[in-house]
Image (cartoon, rainbow, N blue to C red; front, side, top):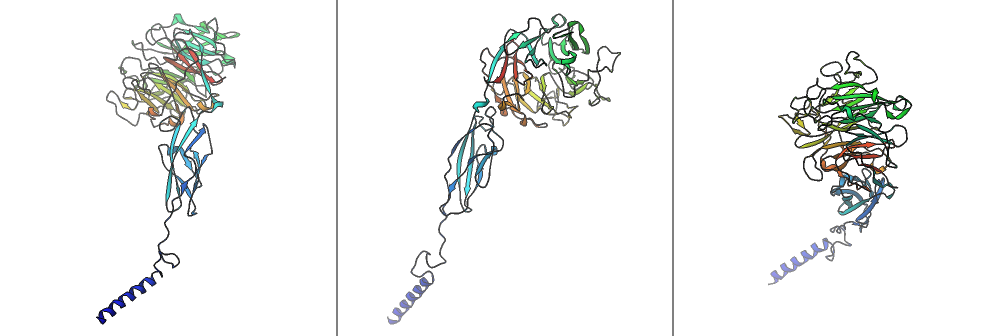
Length: 515
């Protein structure tokens, strides 16, 4: 018994000694050193979860703040959110947009100007997140309106500025008339600027289709038109205004400087003409019509159909040929052979309404599709010889057994045929807006003739070699003060840069700063 008691006593004493070595009286670690560290407390956001910002904001729009019970230094980051790529943040919590937001062209994933981003704050050990909603609002000082400026100009297909600082514009009618319109009053000059109604065919898609004033029009009175003559042949003509009167063209001064025979089909005539910054004239010609380009004109380098042509009409390198009154620019891709010297680009079906961006010099070409795709192509000033694929490609899709050959330049954007908001059946090309409304600058406007839809897309998203999807379009509900915008045949500009919308029914509208 005594031995057993002594053994138990010895064991108890050993346990007591062990406890003493582990912190004295059995405390959890305070006062004795060597115990478990206290649990870390996660930081807590104190900045709000919602924010409203006026469009075009730059710099810091929001400062993230948080507290930390352990007084640890804090750092901030973007950790997620549907629109995380639209933002950037400093370690100190200063949040800004990566690119200034545009209310009229929202870049958030839902295209509703409500951006979702997730922020995180870390104390070096633990972190906390905050779901932040940033709503972009319209700038009340940058509003605009859509105003109807004219009616009764049936068959209107084009509009261009009168280059005399008057604010007036030329309106081209497919029926053979060019008229001068004063948008501020809606007045149309009583006498037409030009009347070639008796000299054209208007069968099918034919008619007076294109117009451009020469760069020196103010002093020379020279202008050019694109039409189909009574036999259907395409003619590019040069005219002069009447002596001492820039408001009336001399119908007897007409000179055919380029003639292109057109097959028996009455569609796919193209028709746009325009000058670049070097005073060279560009001519958009359809493939000759019929379904699928049956003659293979668009891929034939020696044919002028299905092309963008580039000529210099200031001199005549072919005096013996009455159908070629111009010079081939030396920079044209086939100026030295291998194809028709006039060709600047090929592989087009029916380029309908093109334009130059005055800021970049880039040429935007809207090409009407066949069965499934409508497309926008882009040519930089150095892209001569580009082949846009028709009739082997329709947009990014194969056609007629065609493949995605690297010789074909893909469109910079396209949309499918259909009835959806981002679909249509026949594209009408437009312009890059560089006018007085700040929020619209840098947007390319275009339309669908059949569905009467108007869209815009930032030119920053139109990158050569890439095809921006139609999900990047902004559908424009440009409700005018009167009338209805439908069947858009063209856009146009005045000398101030205001954007006009032209309807085949003769209604003309302008997008302008709100009064």
